[in-house]
Every structure is written in C-alpha cells, then in structure tokens.
Amino acid sequence: MSETTKDDDIDCRVASHLLSAAQDAPLPPNDERRLVEHLGVCSMCRHVQGQLGVLRDAVRQLGSS
Image 1 (spheres, rainbow, N blue to C red):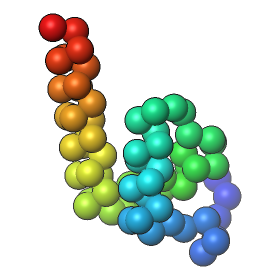
Image 2: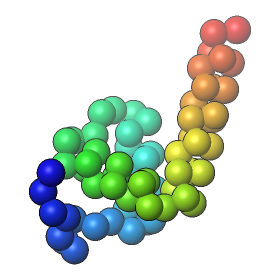
Image 3: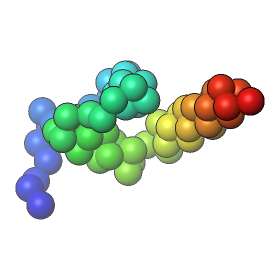
Image 4: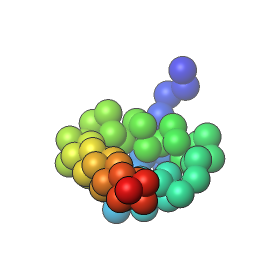
C-alpha cells in the first residue's frame, strides 16, 4: 500500500460530490480509493453515505410497487 500524500487527501465537500456520483455510476479507481480513505476517518461522511443508501433503497422500493 502506498503512502498517502497531502495531494491525495479530500475534504468533506469533495467526498459528498463523490458519494453522490457513486450513486449513478462506479467511480474511477483513484476517486474510489480517496473516498474510502476519507470515509475511514470521517464519521460525518459515513453518516451521509448511510443516509444516501437509505434514500436509494426507498426510491427503489417505491419504483417496484
């Protein structure tokens, strides 16, 4: 595993954009890695990720009824 440089770090604003984009399509590998690293240290963004999952599941359920 390579050492993360400051250039690879993302903030919550970037993470929220990546979380949103990931709802529509798989992220490029580098973006996925950076997001996973951020989620590993940011409980607020993990909470947002969970809420997006709940919302996505609710929309799917509405679409299938």
